[in-house]
Length: 299
Ligand code: GLN
Image (cartoon, rainbow, N blue to C red; front, top):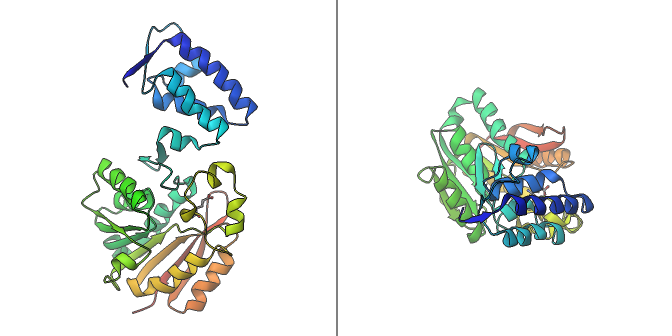
């Protein structure tokens, strides 16, 4: 933190920024996070207001720059995670930029689901895992941490997203256990047929029209390629269900994140495919259908 701001100046700005939050329907906890992440103040300092007389507070940016960045939250509805450049997800603090989808809390559960499944099917604890559309690398790193004996292939169509994912893997020391591959879905690992004990994906699954109606934080800032699942939202889910059996070992698992409300139809897609058994829809903590699971019966 190379800049210094006086306690008084920071306090005064904080008061006016709090008013901006109220006027613009932004939770003050976001402003607090912004200050905590970018300056040497902590949550208690903000709560107790005990820094006003401090001569200098360390900051990553000058006060002028801090104000400018925060204003993007208000005027452009830029997500706080992009402004800070980080997102907390499971045990990780991941680097995020507008090149990657901000990993969502509900997606954290995909790692718990994988862990629960392997409790009953211990052969799944080792071997090759595949994370399709890895984005920031969140799921791949979550798997690497939860399964110390696995080797993960993490694929993404976006080269700039893979760069971020790679940085995140390096930060947590997983670079030797996660291999990043550039390309669309199975293309870059096409020679690894019947090789994966687990395939996991949080694909784009929002219907195109619905994407346009999402809150400005999402539709104006997050990568559409990670959100837009075509006319009915199921384009990529269909493709993954169709092709995963070719890449799974016998009794390997497919776990897909889906949109709330897609449970029944995705369950049917898995059934109709004919190459899956033990098909199940799982729910997130809000009680919404959020994951589809199947075991490959082939080869
Ligand atoms: N869960 C994300 C959202 O609600 C969408 C992610 C996705 O399409 N896979 O914005």
